[in-house]
Amino acid sequence: MIPLSVLDLSVVTTGTKPAAALRNSIDLARHVDGLGYVRYWLAEHHNLASVASPAPDVMIGQIAAVTNHIRVGSGGVMLPNHAPLVVAERFKMLEALFPGRIDLGLGRAPGTDGATAYALRSRLDRREGDDFLERLHELILWQTREFPSGHPYHNVVAMPDDTPLPPIWLLGSSDYSSELAAQVGMGFAFAHHFASHDAIDAMVHYRNRFQPSAWSASPRAILAVAIITADTDEEAEKLATSFDLNRLRRDRGQYLPLPSVEEALAYPYTDSERTSMLRNRSRLFVGSPATVQKTLQPLIDASKPDELMVITAVYDHEARKKSYSLLAEAFGLAMQAA
Image (cartoon, rainbow, N blue to C red):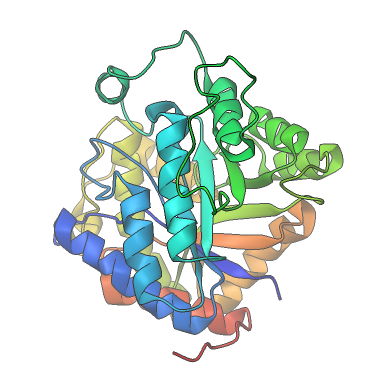
C-alpha cells in the first residue's frame, strides 16, 4: 500500500479558537505518529481567520518534540517572505535537534493577501518580480558554502555549521512547479486539494523530466489530497458540509473560520451556489474508507505518487482524528510503538 502523510493547516473553527487549534495540531500529530503515518507537514499562512499557524518552523519543533517516529516539516515555508539565511539557520537547528526527522518544503506564493505580503517583506531586500529562484539559489549556497571569493557572504556561516539542511521539497500547483522541481532535482509535492492544473500532468511531467542531483538521485513525488472519511458514506457527507460552505465563502474572498455542520446544513443555498459546491467537490474525496479508496485509486494509478499527503478539515477534532484512523486501517499502515 502507498504510504500516507498529513498536511495540517491548524484549522480554526467557529467553536475552536486559534490557540486551541494549535494545541489540536499537536494532539493530532501524536495520534497519527502512532498510526504509522510517515510525515507531518505544517503550512504557512498569514492574516487568515481560518488558519492558526503563520510559523511552521515553530510548530515543527513543538511537534517533533512530542512524537517519536514521524518526519515533521513545512508544507511549506513561503520562501519570498523570508531571508534565505534565516530559513537555513532555523531548519539546520531543527535538523540538529531532531536528526533525520525534518523536511523543508518550500513554496513560491505569499500565503496571504497583497497588503500582508507587503508587510512581511517590507524590511527585506526587495527584488523586482518573482525572485523565488534567486532565493532558492541563495538558500542552497548557505548549505554548500560556495559563495565566490569577494562576495559579501563569503565568510558568513549558517549555524549550526556541523548540520546539513534537511531534505528540500518544492511545493506547487502548476506545471511550472513540476518543471522547476525536476530541473533542480528535488522532491516535489503537488497540491491537488486546491490546484486548477491537472495533477496527473504535473506528476508525470516531474518524473519524466527529473534530473538527478546532490539533493536526490531519483524523483520523489507527494500528492496532497483533501479527504473526509467516516464509518459510512452518509456520515462523511454530513461532515463535509462544513467544507462545502467554507469553500464557497473562500471563493468569494471570505476566509472565515470553518463553520459547524449545523450551520452548513441550515444555510440557504441558491442553485448557483450548489453548482459551485459540486464543482469544488472535484478536489475533495468523501465517504467511507472503501468509497474513498475506490474513488482515489484511478488518480493514484495515473499520477503514480510515492506518497499521499492527506488534509482533513472537519469541524469536530475527534471526527478528524477518526478520519485519519480509518484511513490508516484502510491503507494498511503499520501501528507504531510509543
